[in-house]
Length: 275
Image 1: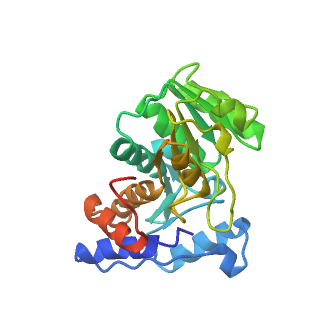
Image 2: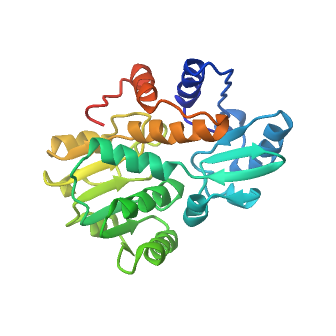
């Protein structure tokens, strides 16, 4: 259920820690399964003695009703990317928000957060919105093809962080025009989902542009943003930092995030200096 680089990333850190650590990818598409098979997969993982599962698109919100307990962040976001299986209980966590926040802090230092356009209100979008609010974004304009989903996320963020901290944008253009930065939290640009979520004509040199997609690292959006002179942030660091948090939840051992960044760079060509 996790990304294609996750198994190697987790296992290399496990080996470096001297652990017997086995991480396997469960690909619904390759198995010919749909998200409704989540319940069966969770049961199978429990029976086989797995310590947990990472959950990715499009299952981060659909898995919630199948769990016994949620962490504070997962409950606030209504989205789960890490499930810990222990003592017959399924506990859902969200490490995506921390991954996004740490990636932003490290690789876009000083980026303005007056107004941010957030594209996508699914599980990844919810995590990015939570992270942006905690980073101090004064206004988050949320755009999604499902207007009701965008409105629900904006209401959740405003209720938790204060009125006016988030609002719904009816169209992408409405969200992006005048924004200090743009976050793509949709699958557009991901391998298998080609395209660009923002018209290149809307990008300005004063803006920063972040993409949660990390496969590929160089999405069409980031390429267009660099041509426009924007500061950019790929999803590579987010993938590493959320994985580091997940590693600790699964193993109980604190990972070396710098070593995991180096592992990810070797696997993917990620440039830690650029983000």
